[in-house]
Image 1: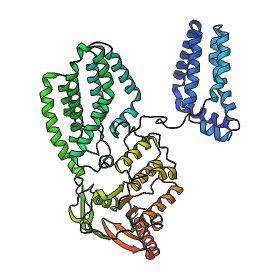
Image 2: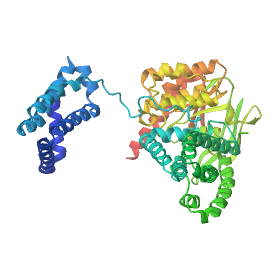
Image 3: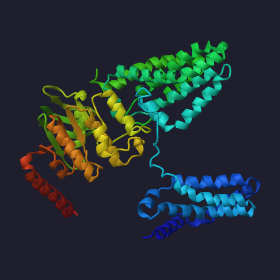
Length: 309
Length: 227
């Protein structure tokens, strides 16, 4: 089967999938074309960039690159031809708005996308924070790998707040609340057994990991907030112990209800107990819950870790 | 010697293992065969302490079998979403400093910098195998270790199991496919209905294959005769 036959078959399958919604899809596509045409009238550079971004996105997300490279002679020329053909329509829209230089630039640069290296399969590629840097904590490693953008945005948010008086330490406290969210999911039982530690020792290890990671990440910001706004340094005396206690609360609440068969960790009641760390009048309730969950966590973990220590 | 003495395991009101008795010599590879639902996984779960015994006992050299001396490869692999293969292997090395993942990564060509939850079933199985063997425990419990593996990986896994046996480790391997066990096991236990239906030494494997065929043929013919 030639590549063109394959493409024709795929197009036929796509048409069958779309079925009676084809007019709607065509309407949507023409709407995008019209939008591009309007943008090309006001800002041809933006329209050209949008078309290039679309082609780049297509190149990065397509799954047939490996197939093309394996089965076609001169695959880059074939891909370049494809991108050239795809760039003709937006280039025509640019030309209709008399933005000739941009139209020519688009048509000339689109085939160059084929020269970009083939993206590696799988989302978890590239350099990442190693588990060793995160104190061998699976929760922190998995959480940061799962939400790298949130992690960066959180750091930027905290950094921005540290520049403002009285905002730095509350922002760090909110960051601790976000970090507490890392302890929401239950890990597989094999991962729990891996350290070969008894329940109390395992809980101590988990708390030490959480404190280490959180305070190591937070200390430069806390220092900056204290140095930039010395009049707010007293807030550190509240932030430190409360953030530490909140992390402990989340860990013991998770293991008090740990069940390897269930995905979610702590119960709704345990999550409500967190409110005390945000609303000071309820703090005693949360502290009582913390003690209760600590005892419960130890006995619950004993069911799984009974022959360690 | 690992002794399983009249072990009964119940779950959900059903008896899964019924007064099962086995004597497993140390430093040998013991195959455990049986059809789906025969109780192979339950037996390994009970040995590892994942399922409590309703009655009976499991002991090693006269004292209870401890998890600290056992590595368990479960038939279903659950990995923590967000962790890469390298994270898993580093974590194992952190808690078992003498373990070395390098040969396994090389052998199985594991894409260790990618997130494990996105790997294929076979790749996950290879990582789980590496994790079980890396820990260098005295007792290895392998539940369906060949599931999802390609031919080369099956060969490699068989060589790894044989090497573990030669190194004096006690290995229990379950499989519902007889030929995969035949290649590695020193003896074979056939489990049916939660108890041991037969035990065969290596020299008796051809007889075991014949008996199993007769057994399966009878069940097949009985099923169609009823129809």
